Image (tube, rainbow, N blue to C red; front, side, top):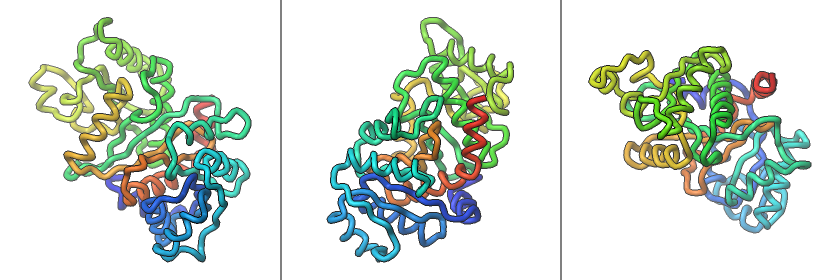
Length: 308
């Protein structure tokens, strides 16, 4: 997919999903779900403080077409929203006006959560003007300082999701500060090991290079200037970042300085999870809903593939 217009089109072709929204009393959430409904992408169940939800529904003209489950406490609302997904009444979970930690605790509840046999991870799809395609970045929100095994799981999650979107052989840049492997910079050693795993067939179909600095990953001229040979330079689909700080800063630079459009998902649970920042725009939340819809059709296949 080259842009979010194509993502929206693919989501509409798939047919409407049903979203359970935790702590739904948020104007941007209401705008996003309203747009998703009007586009034929989604039906929605709102869990939250009904007294705060109703005025927002009225302003959006949606009061007659949504289901509301009244729960004013955001922590309890998160758990009840998860329960709705577990019961089969919804097939996508979405975070509203609630702290991410509280939201994820409900997702990971040992008895009532959406826990699978592998790690949760966060992926961002973004559209930068002039690039001509969507790019992906992981992990900017969940895994703080992943070790090699955790990076392996994060990479598998992202690759499987991208395959489900039709990106059949993603180019992956395992980012570090430079291309020289040094034990003094553990991210370079991890990158080298991930590349070896890729050659051994550990990952879904992809081309993996690393360690690689960001300038080399995005600019073939930088690779040539450094005397490096790269088949993915200037054509990277997925950036696997060394830690949460690097990923988060890179994403926010893209958002605020390049005005990149973005969508966010949590991967690795039994169902797709839309988890955007409380400060994200309604447009970004809509794109995230559409992205979830494009992955949902094959979520069972993806889960089976990871477990195997």
